[in-house]
Amino acid sequence: MTTSAASSKQVSDDDFRDILAATREFVREVVVPREQEIADSNAIPDDIRAGAKEMGLFGYAIPQEWGGLGLDLTQDVELAMELGYTSLALRSMFGTNNGIAGQVLVNFGTDEQREQWLSRIASGEVVASFALTEPGAGSSPIGLGTKAVREGDDWVINGDKRFITNAPLADLFVVFARTRPADDDGAGIAVFLVPADTPGVEVGPKDAKMGQEGAWTSDVHFTDVRVGADALVGGSEDVGYRAAMTSLARGRVHIAALSVGAAQRALDESVSWAATSTQGGTPIGEFQLVQAMLADQQAGVMAGRAMVRDAARAWVDNTDRRLAPSAVKLFCTEMVGKVADLAVQIHGGSGYMRGVPVERIYRDVRLLRLYEGTSEIQRLIVGRALVKGAMKAQR
Figure 1 (spheres, rainbow, N blue to C red):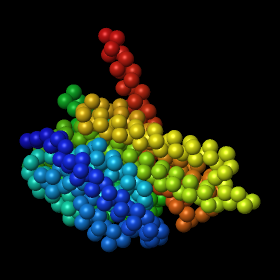
Figure 2: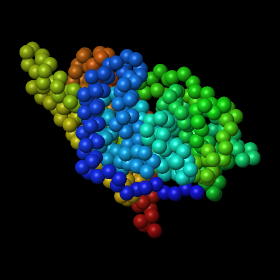
Figure 3: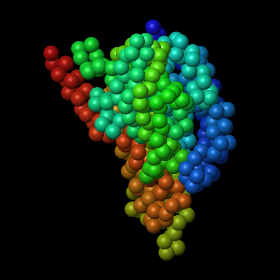
Figure 4: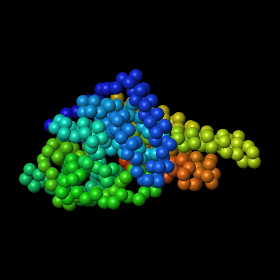
C-alpha cells in the first residue's frame, strides 16, 4: 500500500540560507577551478564526489525521515541555480537520486520500498537511475516498448533503454515497462525497482556526447530480467504512467532553474570579457552593440529566475503542476541557449576555442532543450492545457 510523501516544509529559511551559501562556496571555490579537469577526463574527480556526499547533495530533495535534507521545490530551485553555474556534470552526478528516480520512490513507493532504498539513495551509497527513454519512446512514455510479464509471483522484464543518465554508475534502475495495452483502466505502464546486478541487466558503453563531459549516459538492455513482486513500485501495475508524468513535471522546474544558473554564468563571463578585452585600445564593453547583447542576456536571466521561482511556488502550493512546469522549462531552456549564443558572439573568435568557459557552456546547455521533454512537447502541453481550460469554462 502506498502512502503520500511528506509535503510540509522541513528546512527553515535560516537553515536553508546556510545550505545555499555552502553550496555556492563549493561550486565556485571547489568545482569551477576544476572544470577543465572534468572536461578533459570526462569524469567528476573522486574528491569532489566525496565532498558532495558529505554536504548531503545526493539527497537534498529526499525527505528527512529517509535521510535526506528535505528541501521542497522552492528551495530546490535556488540550489539548482547555484549548481547550474558550473559544469552540468556536477548536478548530473546526484540529479537522478534527488529528481526523476528518487521522486518516484518518495511519491509512489510502498513504505517497505522507501525503507529499503531511500536512505541509501540520500547518502549516495546507491546511485539511482531513471530508465524510461527508449529508441521509440522519448518525451512521452505512451510508445513504451519494454514489457513486463507476470510469471507466478515474479515479473520478467525485456526491453532496451537509451540515453539513461548515470547508467554506467547505477546501483538501482527505476524501470518503466508495459504490462498490458492501454485500456479504460489506465496506460498499462508499471515501474519496477531493478538492482543493477540483477541477471539479464546489461549496461552499454558510455555515450559520446556533444557536451556535458563527466555526465555519463548509456543504453541499458533488459533480457529476461526476473524480479519479485516487491519490485513493483507502489504494488500496482498502474502507477507507472502517473509516476513518470509527476516526476518529469517536477524535474522540468528543476531543469529550468539549472538553465538560469548556466545563463548567469554565461552572462558573468560575457561582462568580464567585455570589460577587459579591447579592440583598438577600447574595451569592447564600451561599444553599444556589445552593450545591447549584454542587456538581452541580463533580461533573459532575470525573467527566467522570476519565472522559476513562481513555478516552484505553484508546485509546492499544488496550484499548478502541469502548465507551469512545461512553460518554465520551455522558456528557460530556450533562454539559456540564446544567452550562451550571445556569450560566444561577445567573445568573438576566442569564444569558439576549447578551454574557454562559454564554449563549454554553449555545448552543455544544448541538451537542456531535449531531455525531460523537448521544447516541442512543452509547447503541446501548454497549448493543449490553455485550449482545454477555455473550452471547459464555456460549458
